[in-house]
Image (cartoon, rainbow, N blue to C red; front, side, top):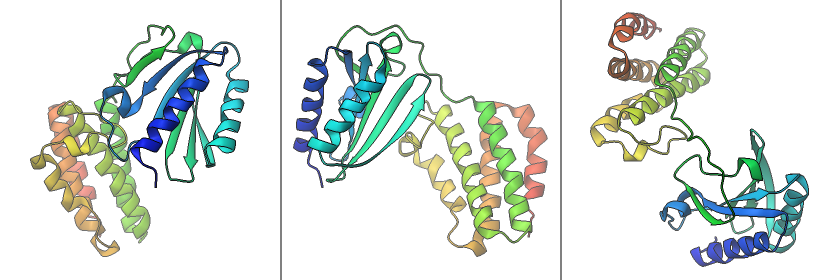
Length: 244
């Protein structure tokens, strides 16, 4: 298990390596550290601006992570032209290194604290669209109904979980907390989250009860976004929860 001291030492080492690499024109803290909100379980999140092709810089940092810092495995997440390389270390620390083309380097969320270099002005990342979340939820609700009717309990549990996910994201939007990846869920008021406990499937013989509970809570969230749409969808959502 890593310690906060281990994390700080490694992060400083990586930033120093970036400063000494003439191909890296900027660096920033991202994630919780950028907001001064780290705790004992936080990972390392760094963004590097790269002049020219990011590939060789990414390869060199990857070699360093395995050779010097006990990386065990890594994976990539690609967004637009940025590669986020996520490392798992032997001490269970996660290290996320983002390699940005210099022209794209800049804050899109508040979780960006410049360490060196000149950032570009970037449009802020918008929150999820409420109507899109509603559409995804009713679509998964239909599949939850058909899964139950077909006797596919595990698939039904999965689909009910997606309806719950989107309904809770709507609640996050309504309460102005992060609505992606569950980041705002524990900041919701207890009077919002407590009823959702009834939507948790305790066993495959309980999928029907959970489906009914999540449909009612989902209807309530639609009413906050679009009352007219809620009036049209509510009877259909209540009908499909009558699946056996």
